[in-house]
Length: 194
Image (cartoon, rainbow, N blue to C red; front, top):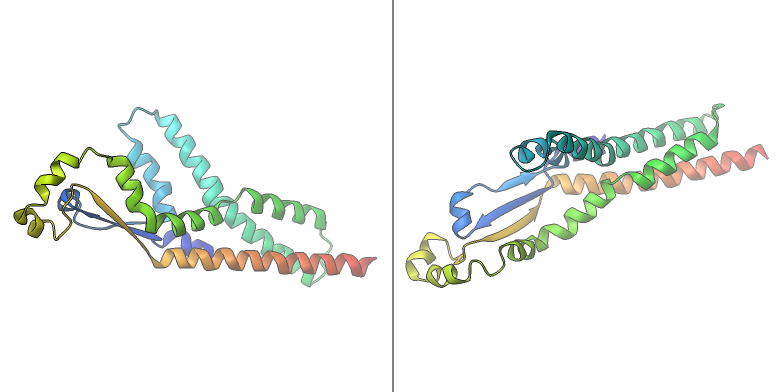
C-alpha cells in the first residue's frame, strides 16, 4: 500500500529562478507516476517515433511500477504461505522474489531523488554552460536585481524534497525488512521439515 501511494505522491519539486523563473513562475512537482505519463506528452513532436515512446513508457512502467508492486505482492504471499505452512513450492516463490527484487527499480528512484534533488542546480549549470555569461553581466544591474528577486542570472534551478520521496523511502525500507522476515520464515520452515 505504501508503495502504491508513494508512486502517486509528488517526490520532488523544482523551482526556476532568474529570467527562466519569470516564464516558469510556478514550481514543478514530479512523482514516479508523472514521469511515466509524461513520456508520451513530452516526447510528442520530438525526433523520436511514437513506437519508441511507447517502448520507453512500457519499460519504465514495467521496471519502476509493476515489478516493485509484484515484489511486494510476492512478499505478502510468501509470508502467508510460510506463516500458515501452506503446501506451495517454496523454490518458486523464492525465485520470483529474488528476480523482482533484482530488477525492480524503486530503490534506484529513491536514491536518485535523494541525491539528485539537492544537486539539481549543478545539472542546470551544466546544461546552460557559459551561454548565459554575456547576459548575466546585464542582469546584475539594479533594475534586474529587483525584478529577478536577487537571482541575477538567466537560469537557476533548485530542487526540494516532497512527502512522496519519504513515503517511497519508507516503503522501500519496509520491503527490505519484509523480505528479510519472509526469508527467515522460509528458512525456519525448511529446517523444521528436515
